[in-house]
Length: 336
Image (tube, rainbow, N blue to C red):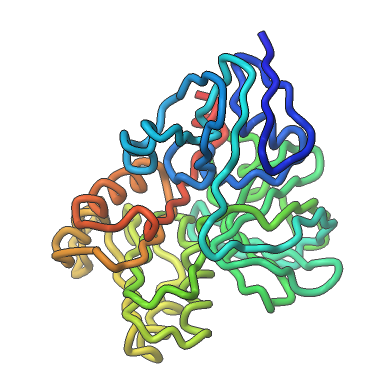
């Protein structure tokens, strides 16, 4: 059965099927609905139901509390209409008001980050891209389905940079790691996403990255330091073993140049004796902080890491509007 869904911010209603979410229908229609993880873990698509009945899929309780649900708030990525519906998305704080562009780009370079991560730089057709650090783009390599990848570079860079990790059995990443080469054409759409740097925040910044989740975190940290934001900025980078670390010298040099910035790699499963921090990133946070109240927390990486860090940040008192998560959910995980 289909239902008519009116989104307050748009003049024309959508027709949404019973087994389709409001966000899926909006994006299929090309609407600029705010979104991030599409899995109920980040809160980027938080909305309010103005009328009608819905069914909610799975989500993280922190991003949609019982009190919010009682006030008719929902997450568009998990909202299935069960009647005609009227809904409105919430405008984010410090909105990133950049035009969403469809660009024909060219691969400038493909470099090795780690054994399973490639650093890909694309040349833009008309100069630097206007975006806010932490945002992502939708990339389409020739003949392959589109995928979302976070931007690792800065808005004034002549190339836009992405860190693409191999997903075994994936439809896109094996091509990137094995076949993509300079000169290849790539379609890019964006910028997208609301898990980006809030420059008006004056409290401490805690940035947590796992694997290729370092890409948006790098963009956020670089921008904060370039803007001479004075508050303490801590970056924890969680990986499994030594071979999974990359850009370590880059961030160590930043830490040496900026006394308010610290970089802490954490190995969860080292294969040999090490002098580095070991364990999981969320355990390191628990050990190092008594409270996160007043901190701005940015998290990007695998969903299991994001979930664990989210739970620890909540336990340490982070405020909901100071928490910005970007789970790197694979297409297979989304479909599941």
